[in-house]
Length: 295
Image (cartoon, rainbow, N blue to C red; front, side, top):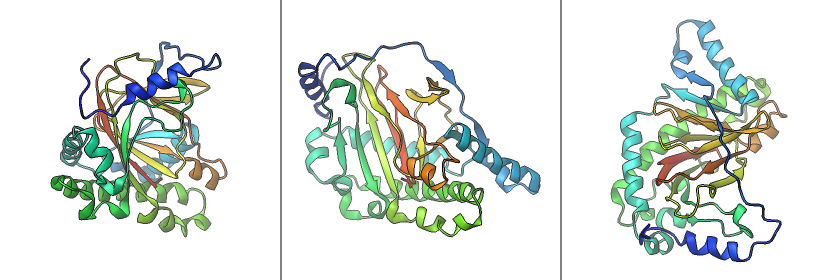
């Protein structure tokens, strides 16, 4: 595999950790994972004229959040055209030279790669990302030469934020009216982030994590996953692989929402497994090609 000048020095960093690893650093063993279909919820039902249908949809969201901590939504209001534009802009962004990404201050100087705090190979994530506060998404000064990215990111972040407010509202209403007064604070723009992830192809081993096992520390994460896959989550004390769905967004509960709900909703451990091809995604946290928004 030929190293591209756009790739961060992941191999060098991983090699250093490998040289200094100890006997307690157990190697990861790849086993065949059961593939799961996350609960799939059609958000069109929330607009039904039938109150029973609306209530059933809201109940399904709350049940999935309690039993799985993860679920998928379709008919979520974010057009496939906007998702495709976001992915196209993301490709151009991550194909920029590593030096440009690391030193030019792009996207509020939010570029990160690998795992700086890792002390052994099992703590290392083979990935790169931008973690952008929503308050900075429309800031023209953040984009440098990537002028076309600003318009697309602004539209994408706004659409994901609207969806996060809808879902958070349903989940908080289920907890009782005393919680609803705080929903505007949870989904306030100042507490939300848009994360752009890229998982470069790894030339070493498929056992290396794209993203190490973790729970999300935020309230709510909405993930736009690519079709390469690689997301795994803990279900019934075992790892299962999430089957990609090109029409769906993935939603998961974060640590803060679990605590805030008194453990009604579950923040579930998950990880990214490396594939032989490069992946990118958008992630929106109310914190391939994945991207995400977090609150």
